[in-house]
Picture 1 (tube, helix red, strand yellow):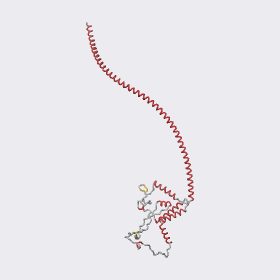
Picture 2 (cartoon, rainbow, N blue to C red):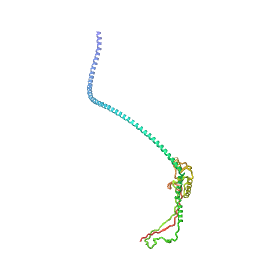
Picture 3 (tube, rainbow, N blue to C red):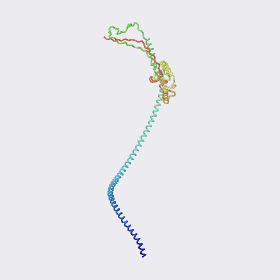
Picture 4 (cartoon, rainbow, N blue to C red):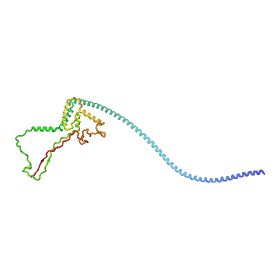
Length: 355
């Protein structure tokens, strides 16, 4: 009995364990039902997704067909590209051949041009040598011709020209007076002149003419004393006197002395040997070089204004009477004209009548 009681006691524990197991099994069944319901819901969702996938697959298939067509078109374009690439290669080869041909022709042209330039240079050098020889011969002939001429002939002619110019311009009145007096002395007076005592007929005193009206107004004439010519020399005359080494006259009183100096200078040149003194051309060239140096660097001690040579100062002769700025510069080398003295007034009456 005790063993049976022990066995029953042990079976109670087993039965309790079975009950727990049955309860767990029932829970598992219920959970299975819930999971099955969820699985069924998911299967429905999967079916809906499968339908969407089928629709999308149809669209993908359509795109695949379009891609296949595009691939076929791309294959055609690639083939055309290869053909065009071959044509480009052929054209490049043709261009290279044309370029090589042009370079050969261009090299030949440049060689021809260099040959022509060398030929022209040789011809130019030959012509230059001939010109130099001709120039040397011409210079020698000119020097020989100059050697035949009278030494300092140009300077003597310049002396004659200046003396004649001063004489005609400022000393001609005295000569005219001398000539008129000489002509008067040569005139022989007429003796027993049959027309002696006769006077010219005047219209206002003749009885044949009739005087009508008051006549014309009296007209007066004023005889003026002949004004003294104003002495003035231009710049060329100063330069010409400088070429001869003479001082130009600065007033009328100095003109006769200048004429005598010019004649003496001509006589002096006639006695000089060739090359003993500088000629007028050499003096002119030296003056031009000095003037060029003066323009480039300026003259030391020369009057300047604003950094430039002041030609309007009193140290320089004026180029014109209106261009000077000072009284001394304006009257440089001139003599003030004398005041005019009025002559006695002569009255002349002229009446014109008509009958």
